[in-house]
Image 1 (cartoon, rainbow over the protein chains, first blue to last red):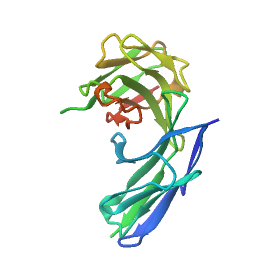
Image 2 (image 1 turned 180 degrees about the vertical axis):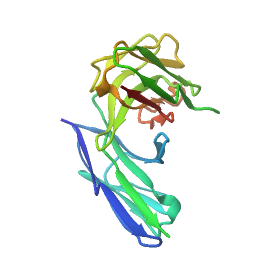
Image 3 (image 1 turned 45 degrees about the horizontal axis):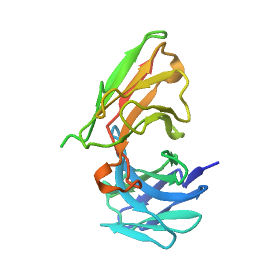
Length: 110
Length: 117
């Protein structure tokens, strides 16, 4: 069964303190792995798509990487405005569905 | 460009009442989805549609019905609301045929917060 597990559930950082969020997945055939950001009271906002092991994508202070079993979202020198819930999701080759993880809530304190 | 619009944003129902949630997208997307989001459980797929006139069951379809009579609209119905259906409901859409890329991310609305007493 396709599954996505994110860790930690919550992460508290000081401004400027770099860290990583983990997304472990099992899927019959990976069509794509997605990272989203979700702010309170809003819908998820797309950040990155990764398609194959070894691929990396960057956007401002965020960098996403992918291996055959997991993905990391690295946050470099975070700012308070980076505080949000980060969701990981995988789409398999067998259909139209996307499986979401429960998310990591990130808090960045000034 | 509005993207994905959900109405209403908030609603309180009594057990046994019915209602319809409306989702509209203006991106000419083929696929549309309804999810529910509960604390600690992530997004769970209720129903989805891969084109006008088609619908399919997701992970948690019981107690819900859907219709996609027009490409841009996807309706989610609760025939007899139960307290267990208290949740935040998100609609999403994806896949522009003209790109030929099935691995497109989903675009989400801002949700409908539904409480059932």
